[in-house]
Image (cartoon, rainbow, N blue to C red; front, side, top):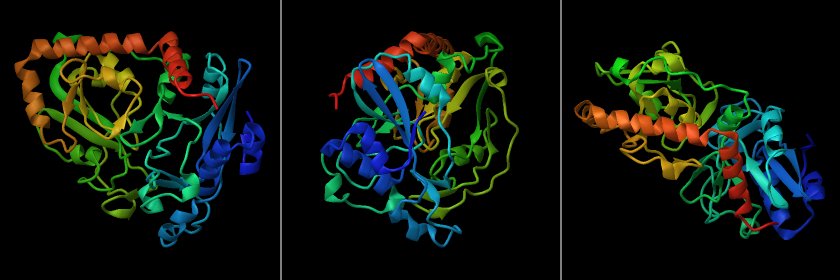
Length: 357
């Protein structure tokens, strides 16, 4: 895979049109963001890495008091971490076998959205207000595993979906049927997410809740700095850690809690095959099958602040047959979507739906 480390090398691949220059200047000069360029010519799909190695200038002042070298840190939305030189073999394999019309496409395969429709600053650590005028106007279409209201990013199947359908990962089998499942709710996950404290990170909050029917905990504390929109720059609060729980062990409970991290929780389709009901906490992020996630049909929605978690749990206790049907529909949906044909079709349709550049 080609790795393009400068604006000039990228423009040599795309051509120096106004749209291409505007997009690539935004990526290299403003965001300093690592992503991919998909170039399709005559039925040949070529994936190239757009590689930066310096901190966005707008973030350096904020970082100066927290890190040794504020010029060489990678900013990924709200997360600050060292740069890592890597390419995705899975995505190179995947895009090589799908049919997409001729054009240029940005694939944002990381945990951060890239571009707001109103051309305001996309990441709080970079400040606020409007982007420079030179970034106003059309850009190459941007695709990623998540989007959100107000962003131009278009959702496509994510990294975990692709790994499953290409055979890199297997979806484990649920260990028990509905009748053998416990009337308990489980959550396991790292402290991922922009929030550093329990009031801004629902993963931390749920780990502190004490209900006899809830088994929730953090398995790993993220070490990277975060820019919490409320609490500012720092590291996540320390909380007691709990052991990991396998897919099979979690499938022994009737209810599994799903909470977004830095972006949408990408393994949702896999967890839908546990045969348990997914309690999906509302969040700002959307996925490529968002329209299929219907409250009381394929998932049970929980308010963003978890304030109705107990209420929704009690509803399930009183409506066991309905919850069983919700779980069954979720399994059916997941098995339908997590196939190579389905993921290929979704990816192709999304890319083919935009005007070619």
